[in-house]
Length: 288
Image (cartoon, rainbow, N blue to C red):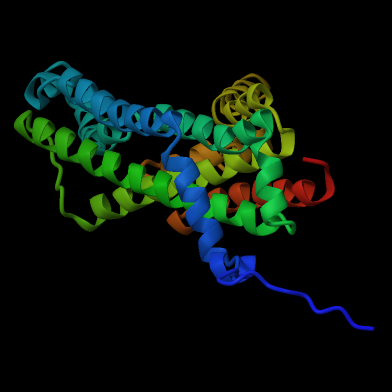
């Protein structure tokens, strides 16, 4: 005896009414999460204000070129002239370190906030494989942080160069070096965000993630510089150039030892990639 199953008129299966879960939908979901967080708006605004504000302060603080050159002897003028040629990039990137710290905090919060509230379980229930969720978070965060970096870097150069030009220093807003520096700063902040996201996924803690990310970005270069100066160890001095923060300075147009521009990009990419891979593996293997 067979039993007929009656269906309610107009009823549809969930996959028909809601549509198939696809990666673009996961990305859209992560974008909605990110833009609806109040911390996202304030951290991005803080990063832009820090970069532009510090660039303005440094540019205004630099004395006129005639005054600066007049303070030194003839023997020292060549060195002062060479240093003065870098004032535009120095002023424009002076706030990059502080912006990277703010972006790192945002990167950690994006993942650690979901662990603390339990929302990550809902995300992993909707996407059981987990990896697409982490990739979507990474893409959205990278794009947002990179755009914030491009905007803030372009604005800082736009503020610093005219001020310094008025003081007699050279600087061109539309030169190839300036454009590459703007692009490099934006890319660096995007990679910092990915690195911090990976650290947050590894530690699953807001406090621990922020401490770990800021420790690598801020404390580790100080320790490396201190050890190098005290012990005169050459390999420590060489390794210091491969820290993500120093690579970021090189990407933004400042000198980073003897590293080529492509080496700075690869160094920052490696830091971000390692954090991403380790975080993704641990997300797959550990309980949410």
